Length: 204
Image (cartoon, rainbow, N blue to C red; front, top):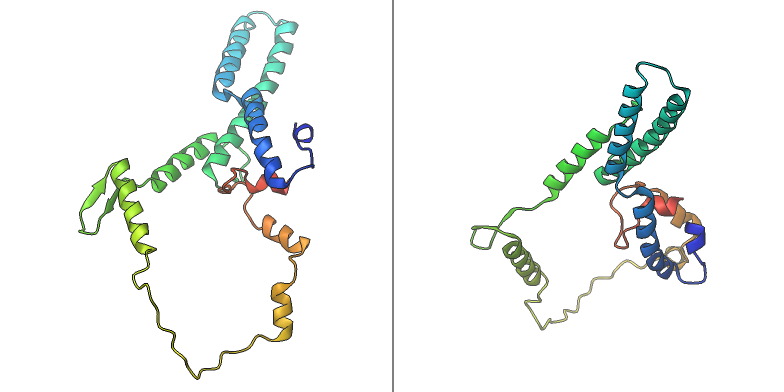
């Protein structure tokens, strides 16, 4: 899917923007409604097992095996889905930890949610609109210049000069190896950048 939608004829940011709508469609078609799919397959497996209790039917045995394989794939997708949302590291026991990741996601969301803040008069403020206004005022005040005119003071202090080799190191072009090291130092599925793509996308 990626090869079909990656032309290599545009700047990387334009390619990523174009890819976004294709990824959303692909996600919906491939991974959409994972929970619903899982419930449907579990019902079918339960029905086959009930029907097959009295007499062993080779056709039903084969169908159950196929459904078990499909279920295993869906469980893997579900685990990855919650793992990505939890933004945590894999557990080492090898079991499916969907419930763990689900709980971890809820805890992270609860921890990151701001419900109340104190204003300039030390009063508690709550409510989405009121909190937004309070934060907006705070940063407007923080980044507003209080002193419009500044006086330049001449000093006799001599600043340390940058050596020629240090200057060359500062202005040289960034190497591909430096870019690679920086990219691979980012956790694969930690918080994505503004474009929404996690580091794992670029790792691959």
